[in-house]
Length: 309
Ligand code: MTE
Figure 1 (cartoon, protein in one colour):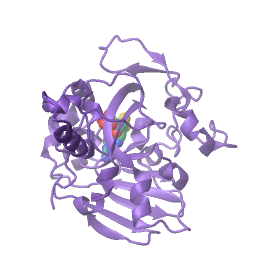
Figure 2: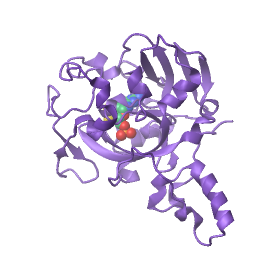
Figure 3: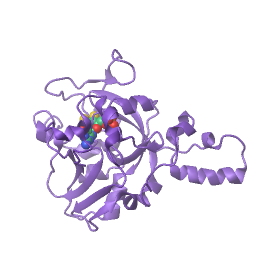
Figure 4: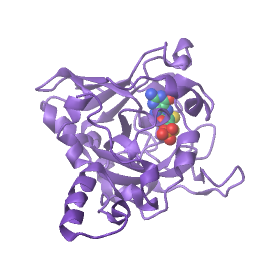
């Protein structure tokens, strides 16, 4: 069924608590509401528990999150994705899952997500590049999907690719990067419960400029690891290619964990500029693993993160 993964809720329907609400809870909540015969604006009263990893920090506005983006397939300017990404057709959408898996296939996204969407949560996560934002994603653990397709014991890494469609992605008419955009994670990183696939934000379907209809979110790594508009997920046994690492291995490592102690060769990574505060907003200190050390530091035990950056 096309569009099966769509979230039913529109931002305009709900209060600012919208980032606590998803389709599953709306369905559950509707039942509760009927049973309790509570009068009044039902939607506003349905609040549910966000993912345990959600930060208490206030999210950025929908406008900030959808108007300041990196998505080179639509141009290199921060406002290019918002201007150009509407041309991308995201339904129907297929995701090829191949390599070291028990059930490979070219899956229709709706089929792939049926059942998985029941595990959707709201993840209000920090993300950092040179700037930072707090984004209320609708998503589910990548591990849920990987377990459904059956990861074989020889798999060591997960590789991801973005769509190549220059007719709809004007940036791909130029060799800005080697297309397709690609990324990779070590299997234990991919299986960590903080690694999610997002299908929405602020309770709505993902806007195209944010990587519709399916994108990765790895909040303890720099933003470029969070690959958008995914069409291929491969389980492999060797460290896969990753776009910025291929482009400039001296500047961008495979791991790209947020680390204020390891500078980029051309700039300090000790501080970040929160978006939404205007051009002159104060920079704030960047935290190791973007503040998610309790969840992920164990993955890198014994590694020298200034070498494996
Ligand atoms: N994915 C694709 N396919 N193409 C891109 O250019 N840019 C990356 C990442 N994913 C990018 C991508 C970078 S550099 C960042 S910082 C984040 O997307 C930005 O995500 P956002 O625009 O949703 O904040």
